[in-house]
Length: 179
Image (cartoon, rainbow, N blue to C red; front, side, top):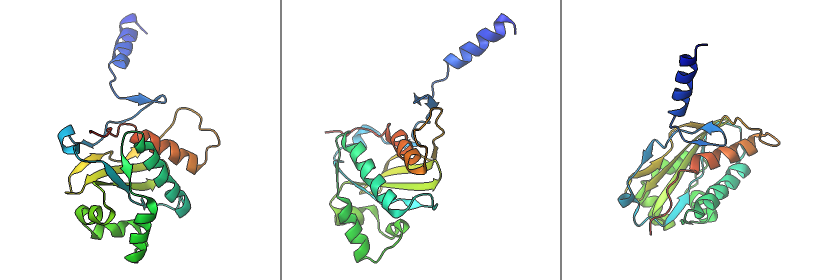
């Protein structure tokens, strides 16, 4: 290959501005509201996922809800305990997370005494989507569909570990709380 061709390839590689974590490319969030819209958002509720697959059973999705809360707690947010959300769903006789869509975000936030909701979906193995919706219905942050294809070895590669890594990758650009 001529020197000019090698130089052109190196220059193109150097211009790639896609954020990288763990050695692979991660797209920016599909939606990220300006800082002024985040003001007053202190307490979040992590809704159960819309699980469009049989990849994970209920006990794992409940555990991952706690993982999400723990991860975002480090960014300054407080969380409604899962048991509060689960009691509401039992009271309403809901069996699927999608049934929460019958309520407006304002109604759910009033019921759970929070400022915003974290919705998430498991689309299939390695594919997730997240959204943070304020009580007034404003989408503050959303990933769009994200796929984790790690270029590194995940020790004991099973679906739970892969989802755990994928959740961390999806949430790493979630904004910190604005006091």
